Length: 121
Image 1 (cartoon, one colour):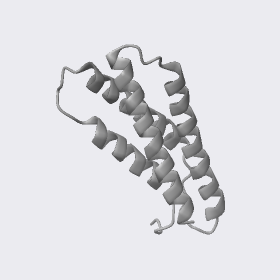
Image 2 (tube, rainbow, N blue to C red):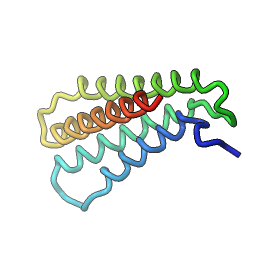
Image 3 (cartoon, rainbow, N blue to C red):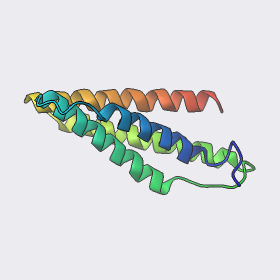
Image 4 (cartoon, helix red, strand yellow):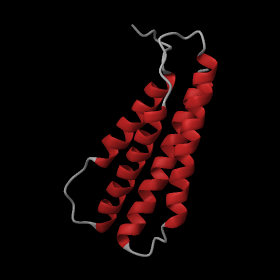
């Protein structure tokens, strides 16, 4: 049985994954920007899943300090990967413009989640 403070990393990453999933679901628009944005949020979800696979799990909050640090590091790694995606995409085509917008949106969400998580610890 897990306590309310157990496994903060997995809970934070699950929240972030749900946010990216909720924003990616939309109409079946033929707009290249919309397709690019959806692709960006799919990439963001994959980055979160990668970090979730490495997220620490615990039954006790006795050693919460290391889990908080790992969670913050996981969020930083996700943000770094998103920033690399942003840098690697030129934004020449409409799809790329949408992709860059989606990646930028995802970076803001990661930063918000990180700030909220850090302020509650």
